[in-house]
Amino acid sequence: MEKTNENMNRLLEMLDTPSTYTEQEIHDIINSDDETRQAYRLMAAAKQGYRQKQTNQPEDVEAAWQRFEQKNYKQRRLLPRWMRVAAIFIAGVFLGGLSFAAYHSYTLKLQKQHTEYQEFADERIFELTEDGERIIITWLKKTWVETDNISFIEDNPIVHSPALQINGDHKAHIQLNGEYIDINRLPKLPASEVKKIEIHFNQGRMINIITTPVEIPESMYYGL
Amino acid sequence: MIDKKRLHGLFSHHYSEMIHLARTLLYDDSEAEDVVQDIFVRLMEGNILPTDDKARAYLLTAVRNSCINRIRQKTLAEKVRELYSQDTASDWQQIEQRMSTIEAVCDYAETHLEEPHLTIFRLRFQEDLMLKDIASRLDMNLKTVYKYLSQSIKSIQEQFRL
Image (cartoon, rainbow over all chains, first blue to last red; front, side, top):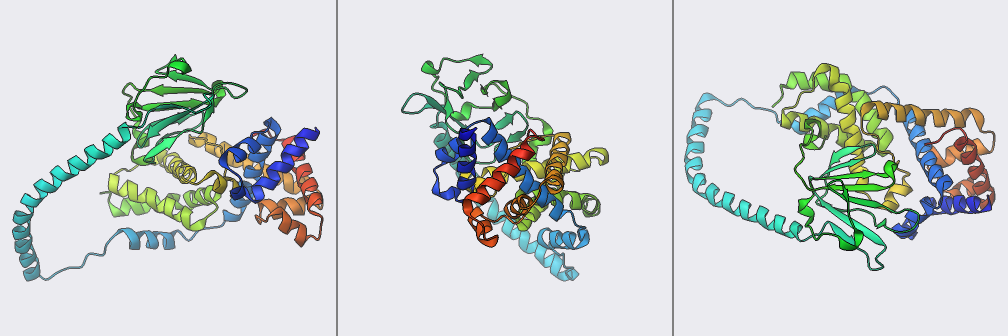
């Protein structure tokens, strides 16, 4: 009981000044024990709950639409006929000249994309920390990530998992395409090989890395 | 591009609920508005028009996911300072369940905590004050504030497992 109180006090203290703690310290404090972890969730829920009550006021939807419209729809101005004809003629001359430049621009763009891919390809999926007791998993933008409760397409250019313990209390189990892998013989795969990553803490902290092609549900396109 | 009139219809019908959810999750009005506007821009540019019966679930799930993406891009210190939830419900039924749970947590606190526990609880989670500021405002010892808040959290924890 005394230990739990101590953990709770450490949590409350840390929440007041989190920037004075390292990420590892924050992580350790929140996860000191199940009670403390629950306490953090409850505090987050309390704040959200109050926020939910505060925001539950009627909205001026039409004013919001006006802001949206102003920002996203450009007003079209009607031009006299002679100006439209002149504009079409000028556009035609421009387009002729631009087509040559466009070809070169397209080639350059392809080269740029290729370079970007090469940079990403150097990242490995698995990285064992120096003490050999934790593992970091890397995945890239547009990877499909599925956790216990959410499924989404990664937005960030490159993402590392928090260091997952492979020994001790919070041991993580790593699978590659559904098969458990020996953490002492991690394959040297580039992160660009990852098609999907499944993170299931409800199933004994299991991480399944899928490198075979997957069909992403349509509802998740455009980051939705 | 989606017909403007149809997009306006969708916007008028769902904006209120979307903005409430985004504000609840992000605690920041202007960021919340960006999230909702971005979703309509993506609908417009992607030429996506969710069907009427699924539109609500689709749009609210989109808000939820966009908010989570924004939260994920913050540092851990920023996340805990703002007490962002680490919950990641994905489908709309789970989100609705979560929303009713957080409301129940607040209702429970409001109806069951006695003074000075309730005032401290409100100052911390409604007004977002640091504990030393609460101690100073209530002219109370900091350790006493810790004690009362811990007691409040434990008593609510006995009712809710999140």
